[in-house]
Image (cartoon, rainbow, N blue to C red; front, side):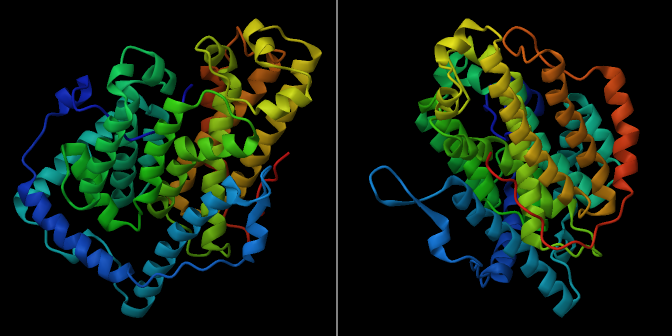
Length: 419
């Protein structure tokens, strides 16, 4: 089934061949010194919990205590938020922002990085046109960083656009646990200033300049591991974790680059939660849109216990018949997805003014897919819900108008409730 932007890409893919590899020796030396500086600046970050640990756990059938998927993910959220707050604190104390300009970049390396960022921008412009137009409104530094993160994700999608195809399609033989281990090793090299190719170099530079942590990137790889071993999800708790791995991670990566508006009164954690919610909402929307396509690959990305409660089973999905039971089930699933979109909306207004438009556009366009599923009488077996070009064009000025609304002065954002 389709997933959000994931950065992995095969070194033998067509795009990698087009990009070519390059000598990164000079870049590695610079990046190592930068990363050492960054680690020294954030090594004392202490992530504390505001909740009692008892509230984090639930009893499983064996009677043992287990942490819920939402709480596991929240640990990552807190870590990302702590990095941002530490950077803001240091900026207030020293009036110096941690950025690439802290170290003089040699001319040759600067040219290489410039070319790498430009190539990332070209990838975004070709394969994510709407989003690319929105990034042009950002500051140059943030625009390039977003290109680096999304360029990595897009080239992975160009290699094989659907996770199903990774597992079931012609590239399946290349996707093994060992291959994913190698990807994780490459990721660690990237974060340590040893990029493999031009797009890696841009991302390596980005994770120095902005407080981006490696964990969401590693979690993306874990999502691919999950797709290798799972084609069913017993509960929404299991599905939530999968949605975080393949889509929520993108939100966590993006917040430090998008930036939080200086006048925002929301907590850093709440903004990260909203970004996470947008990723979850997008992936749930993908799942609901692609039920028929996934079924034809033998996959069901719907909570098995909720299907049973609705009087449905995998056989009903494989049969592909729209019944009253299916309509009622879909109404509840759509309601849940919209709840996550609602939470995400609260956070978009807290972002930097120059970053709100592309995020609003993404949110509005994806949310409309749910409307189209309803318009198709919940037939997501044989009809694919999509937003027409006229509706997309209408959404862009609406998104722009919403981006002009300043941050609200409300308290911490509420979290979407499991329905």
